[in-house]
Length: 114
Length: 113
Image (cartoon, rainbow over all chains, first blue to last red; front, top):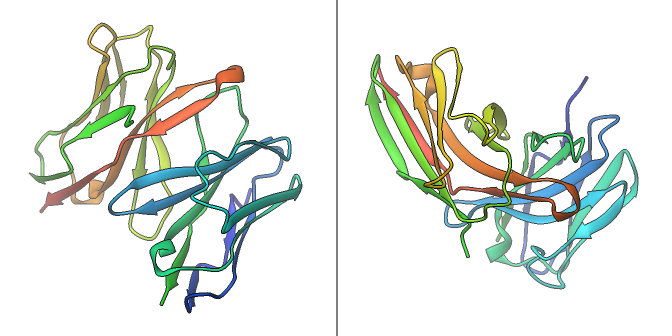
């Protein structure tokens, strides 16, 4: 199994630009999570989906952030417009929810907003 | 409100020493306590986990000690090696309709050769 695949691995953009991060979860997993990691705040859950349906988006910082999961094998996290304070590493993770708390993380997308 | 408190923030240990990382939780609904290990440039990966019906779990050099009454758990790394240098996150999980997985803020472990 290829694991969770994220793209791009690195993104440098200017303030005000739209950013789209992509994720392909592990085949057969029914839940997908987007996390943001910073030195100051650690790992923050932004949103999670169960069977492609958003269940909890209370961690999404503001309306500039949106996430979609159009099918079981693909999800996007979009930031529009981006701001310097959005600079962070964004992780996607997938799991078989309900069985254990084990999440399988991708390698992350490092976003820098200038 | 931080539901899982982790300490220390950073830890330096000599090769062969014991590394100890502590976590405390507040929500008694948590029923699974995993530890994740993260190397630079990588995503966190599950290292070891414990359920609250046992007080200790050991896998190789890694041991979780769990104190349900105190709502505390800790990770012990015996015979620490430079390859163990990473960031370690404790977490607490509750499943079902009240799903929640909360991470501690992480501990950066450096094992000197």
